[in-house]
Image (cartoon, rainbow, N blue to C red; front, side):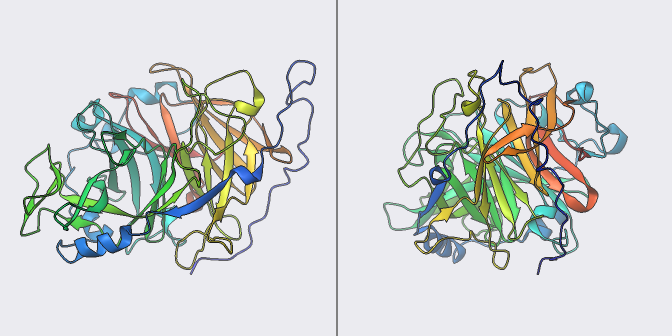
Amino acid sequence: MRNRNAVSLLAVSAVLTASLTSPATAAAATAPSLGDFVLAPSNANLHSVVGLLDAQLPKLGVQNILLQANRTDAPKGADCTSPALNTNDRHVVGKFCFNEGDTNTTQWMPQGVTTVADAQDDELWGDKQAILVSWYNKDTSPAKGVRVSFLDTDTGNYQHVLLVYPFVNNSGNASYEAVTTPQSGDGGSVHAGGIVWYGNFLYLVDTRRGIRVFDMRYIFDVKSAANGDVTDPDRVGRQDGTFYSYGYRYVMPQTYGWSNPSGLASFPPDHGCNASGPQKFSYISLDRSTEPDLITTGEYCSDLGDPDRNGRVATWPLNFVDGTPLTDGNGLWRARSADRLPKPRVQGAVSFANRWYLHSTGGGTTGPGHLQAAVRSGIGVLATDGAEHDVAIGVEDLSYWSSRNQLWTVTEHDGKRIVYATPRP
């Protein structure tokens, strides 16, 4: 049961100043239509297929995965450093490194981050505290989809879990494949730009589709299966009676999906965004300061010189009892609010107590990222609030650890990868 102590809202609605943007020099953004932010349930049969896999493959819970995490050679303590932090002007209050193989590869790119503070109101999973990081596979054929690192904050050790999509194969057997888009055929890896761990569920954004949902209660141990093979890095799923997993010990299949009702959305080239229509699902975070808890999703958009195309963020209500979306009478998941972003190239956004925190980039592999707060300056429009801070190179998704007052993120560029936290400004 989550703590329902009241959270004092900041007095930010009074920040309605013309000094934030000058009408003489910049056009004003207009509020987006809340009707553009609707998701419908999809992939209704996935849970039954996962049940078939459950009858054949052994499982392991999150706490035990953390206890036996096999990446034990990552730099720790004072040895955990990264050139990504060379541009950061904020105090670092926590950090974790990856090992050399995960830091320097171009085949896997870290993107999303979530913590046990999102998962549980008491910020514990059993007696463990964990940080999860999502990666998408980039330079292999076929695309291997998405993996998630389960990092034990007590030890700094971590374990990769491969996310998979379950299906029944032509022989009538339960199997699984890489998480790609489109899902069938020769699609590329889902970008995995953000994740939220909420109760038993892991929410993963799929840029053009919506949100995929995975269940922490179904993490299968392929290595311990009587017919499992974790020695082959090139095969996945059930083949000739053997379960493969691209060499990963653990796989976690998708159990539910929430998709744009009209199918895959289309967006302008070169990371451009639309002013209206279905949202681009670039990143995701959780806000526990509200009633009910809210998921925040947002768009990464290149600078098109149009305030209505900087990108949009939306909030989606959750059921804290079972961790599922709060839907309307027709079974649709409708956003509670939607707002224009005050700047382009936002890589991550998290809200707390009616105030947003935005990560933006633009400096490539050498220039700093930026962290800036924002508040509503009108109905459906956010405005920057306070100084813009230079932060690490290649910053991505954001997650807020409330009891510590910390913003957590991960940096993406090979050779410059680190998971770290700074105080909330």
